[in-house]
Length: 376
Image (cartoon, rainbow, N blue to C red; front, side, top):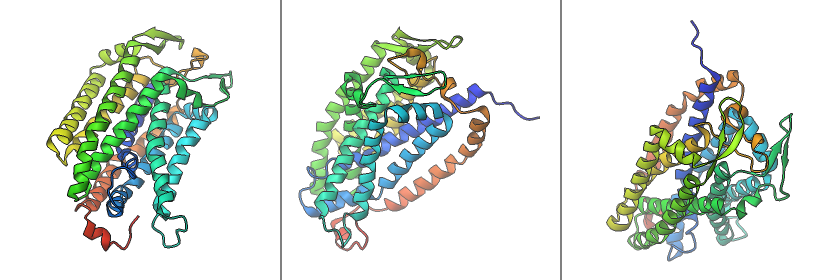
């Protein structure tokens, strides 16, 4: 007898997968965070080369996860993809542009025929390091604050602002999450540099920089969490589908789901432990505690936005145009077919871990960089 899998189950399943990919992506933004220090952290060209090569060996993991995240969103919730990319295209174009120049920089920075010099491509890496995490944070914050769009009977999107997504930059709550993700990426980048490079002088600089970036991260993150939990949320009625603003809706979602609450609080504790290890103990293992905390916290935030009778992509202009998991998803057949394909994810993760371990078998040293045939 064929097992029946409901459409609602598949929608929730794919939101879980997307939440997991989002958490992994935010952790892997340590590459971008490290790039944002390319001009300020290294004391000389050799140290800069070590930093670039340490991050360069991982940039493809971040890029691939970003593409996978976008692809999963497109396949499972195509109406979100059409609405967001069809209306807020300037902010998404800016994000994609920042990642494109990163790929160009790593490819051509040390090529013999590089007529522009390494500084031009280092600037590309710096731009991606700052702009990428910040804009991703701003874009995700609109899941809670809403966007200026409306849909007609045929689900054709009309954007209310001529800025097409860039108007999100004037919302203070969006800026809080954008800055929180930026400083989190910078902290993760510093932890990874300390973990992967063997250089006493550089390590000393890293430990001082962690505290300077951890403080604004905590301030911006806590301010964002307070804003969404104590403010209004977009509740979607399970029967009628009507979307209304409800006071403390996201707080009720958090307290009403023990799994989400444990994910959030457990992740926050692990991130705080990582900061304690990095700042006060100078531990090279801090990056792993930070990563183990970052992923569940991001997942919990996505759960708040998508589960519990909530519109995950709300419209501030026309609440009834807001997107819920049920409204935005693909057909039951498509989601079911993709679910079977998703069962290979553990094998992909195992391969990534194997490749990661092989690359990081030993820390980068000045001697290795001096004799490196292939260097970024």
